[in-house]
Image (cartoon, rainbow, N blue to C red; front, side, top):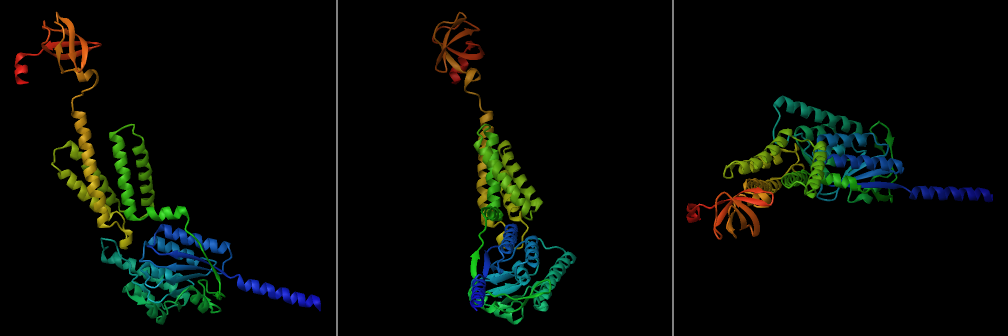
Length: 431
């Protein structure tokens, strides 16, 4: 009898512990969708599976983002062994454009009050493709949306209209049209609503979660991903590129300075790495390179600022066109482009002008600096004697006899002896 009671008690303990041990991993995505976001979500899904968490909760607030990164995130979610819950929150947040695709890919889609989603029509950043190409892009996006939504058992027609007609929905409209599964005031309210409610996974199986009172652990973004997300901001990218180019330029004009060259190489490599991950317009990159060429040419040709103005215009335009993104948050802003191009153009033109003028100036140091200088004969030159020039007393040999106190001009430096000529009287009068 006693062993039986002990077994029952032990079973109850295990059941209690099991019920209390439900854990959810949580991440927050509150920016535009880009490569760092895709990697962050992928790693969070792997961590949730490795820790045997009940689910992964993604708190979402995004204006949209890059198509490739969105596709990668959807792939991560659809193949996840752990159920993924997308919760558009807090109040005032949105899951626009690419955000709707991610929301619909979730095992469980939910929104907080005062949020909205939709407007998922594919667009180009600045140049609209021809009608046939635009139709292909639209049909492809709509097909992807229908494929995901139908597997999740949600409203295919409403989701398709968000792509083709750019429709947007409030949280209540999204719930009424069955684009989402729940409206929740906070995550614990969401967990209570989800608990014991069956939902459809992408492979067609049905599952349930017991999340009421679940412990939530936050999965932080690694330092590497934080740095990556930072440099993938196009506004930061153009600043990094400009600093790198300026440092390299300074190193070329002051060989051996080392520090500017080192900093320049690091910044250029960081910019190159970011551009490798972003959809870059190479024509815009060519504009930026030509702009630097115009800055250099300004110092060599008397254009009276025309080349510098052209370089600034090209650098500004190239910066604005550099990243091909339909989302304003993932493009270089006009203020940033002007703040980089105007000072950079003026600085590089100024530095190059100073460098060219320095090369053209007469050398005033060393042996070459003595040639052409006028000195005073300290002793009579018959033809050798002493002269005072450049603040120093030198041995000199004159081409003609020169009385003491007369001026002579240095024609050649021969070791420690100067070869001089008498200064013509006409030159003295002109001086």
